[in-house]
Length: 393
Image (tube, rainbow, N blue to C red; front, top):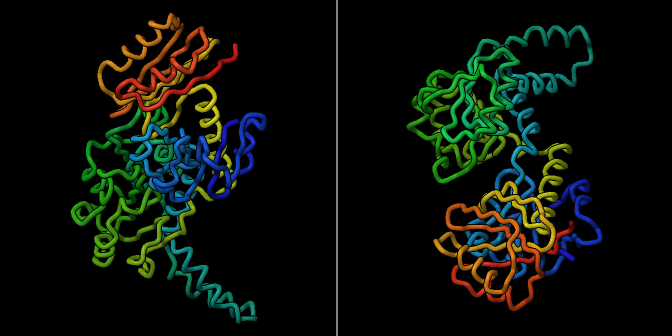
């Protein structure tokens, strides 16, 4: 019986993906084999000895101690793309709200709640509506920084709105490139994109190289009066530098999903309370994807959408399966197979992949593996953990 500990409220449709006959899923699970969470801040102390995986029902994993997990051989999963449509729709709302003072207009009408005469109300409204006039998106240019699952969807939607779309992503994957409409103009660098875009929307992960990407120097390149949208992560934007750019008019408006004290009171800033994935559909999609990845990993050893381990999938060949995690140094796999050969254990299929400092191996064998064999594998230098599966044919 696999034990899964949950944090936060996980959508029921996701929890239903765990087979009841082999999984115990609870917020109070003791010594879990896996943890499933959303925004809960996981501490290194939460990583018990039996833990094999952590799944984040969402894209970002800044609430998970990934480095510590890697050091202990714990696989960290996320769910890229599961909430992409939800975020895309919020970005479209931000584009529209940044182009017309809809929020100001709504607030003005609310101030007229005490006016009971219809004719008077109409006169007041018609006399003041020019205060909230904006501009159309059609014909404007949108710069999309990061062309992954969300960025590519935003780019396509902006094209449908009649915008000219500029894109920048030096690390774009093959899959993302296939999803990207041909009409998106690929930019060679960020300064070129910033200088040409009326609107800039950020869709990059929070990494050491992207933290503070929008700073005093980069903001000087923006087209005067342009609009900046941030529905990626707050630290990508230097709040103090942005406020200065808003004050001097370099940035005309800022719309983001991450309130910070420096910006909440600024008249040309619109901030939402981290609503990007806050739809029923996104929460369900993330929960389902995370649960299915955990089930696949715990029952047959496959890894999909990990942020710290290589992607490894192997169709079961029947018999028995070994999953061996080791530090990515030469010679470990040879020593593993030598242990099996010395015990006359025949390998029928295998796959080995590495990522940075860790390597992961799935090895299908015919014979059952006794405990002394498993112990011998665990004692090998640089082997971090060994798991054994009885495969169904």
